[in-house]
Length: 487
Image 1 (cartoon, rainbow, N blue to C red):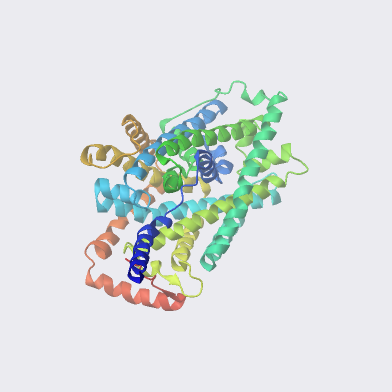
Image 2: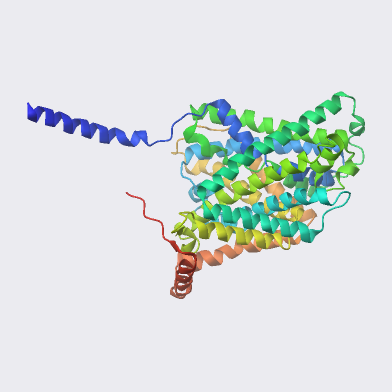
């Protein structure tokens, strides 16, 4: 009897052990509505408060400006559908890195990692912090643009504060994110509703002859797309929620097809709201477009607009720092950067070296850069790798036919997105060459030197330089290597 009960207990224990891993999986609790909300919340950020002026300055008229905003939404939707196929076909984490590795091998994949660490993520962080400082300082300089020294100083201070918050506490960083996420949706709703009310009252004068004075060139269209697509940045992050979606192979493409056009609608309505209050010439005057809108529509409560835009941008900057810090941490752990960048603070249990490194690079970009040049710099690098990644999807249709594709888009979509990406990369360089594109290419190619010295061949003299540096930084910052995860 005792043997039987003992045998039964052992069988129960084995049964429990065999079922235990199932309980640790992510719960599929997000339906279609939740997926749409995540998409809208991820994409809408600081871009819509900065980009309208730059898009209009490149199109020079209201009609083409609104068409560019709609076209950017269509391109983001098509790109997101391609990434949905990639994300469900190659389920490794790391963004574009594993997709490029599977399609083209280690060198393009490493160059993406390098470019993300030194170009894409820090320049994005710098742009958002510069936007924050523009909106915070604008109310104090009514009728004129704030001095560049003030803007850059405030932006550098924002980088410092956000870097410190994230380096000191993971929980504090997440609290900041939760508080400021709602602010951006509130201010978007306020601007759209105010604009629609004014439009209904007959304020349509600025929409008459909306294509008059248009002088478009190939380069100008490319730069208009750069600035418009900056506001849609985040569309490529959407396949990260696949594991938590109910019926993801149905709901993910549906969430993309509904969510991104919804964002597009919001952006077009916000631009329409701006044009109901300002002429094209007036909109081009101030950098902080939403402040002028608030002064004319919400006075005497116009202070609400810069306050909520500041909340929105600081929330976006915090989110950028939080995720980029983890990217640097993973790059250090994988041996793509100095090992010390993968170390964790003994006292705070945060990837402090990675976050501080990211903050330093962002501050370096703030010193010489302005918002427009940094957006062009960011967009050139980002769309080079978006195009390369989506062209990898076309290549793998022929080279990796054995891979399962739960979501499979018509091949014409990745081909069109690849060609549009090629246009976006080449058009501004050919018709409007600027120094930022040359700097960007040089930064990318410099990654090859680091790759061959420290990653591929691991030369002895290179290791002699990196090891003492790692040791001294470890002692200075009180950080240790992370524990190896159990097998």
